[in-house]
Image (cartoon, rainbow, N blue to C red; front, side):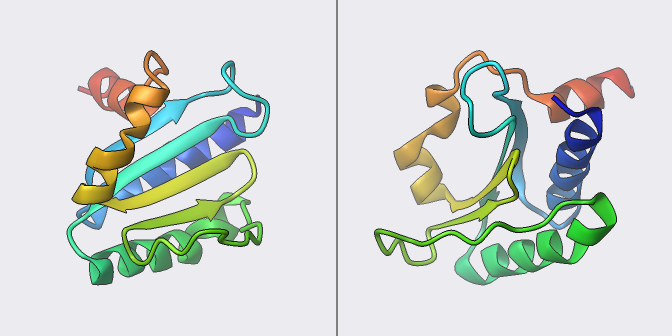
Length: 123
């Protein structure tokens, strides 16, 4: 697990908070699967807000040393859930409806929330 990737994931989480993403978490899932180390999950207030958050993430990638991996959507999910695959970091931008329905935090129960940890250690 690369410490630079961890720092980039937390930085992206803070970026989403700064742009009014709700209930943002940065889950360390590195010991739980082989295809990603971090999941960033944020709730957007609307599809327009979700696209704006997506743009802010894309605008910050070069500076963080990350790049988007092209993915194909198999099932059209509209504007409810935008997934950004950055390799070891996966960003999930979801409406409240989608977040409640899919409940990703429950699937990854027990995974440390690095954003919450970093905020509590800075207080």
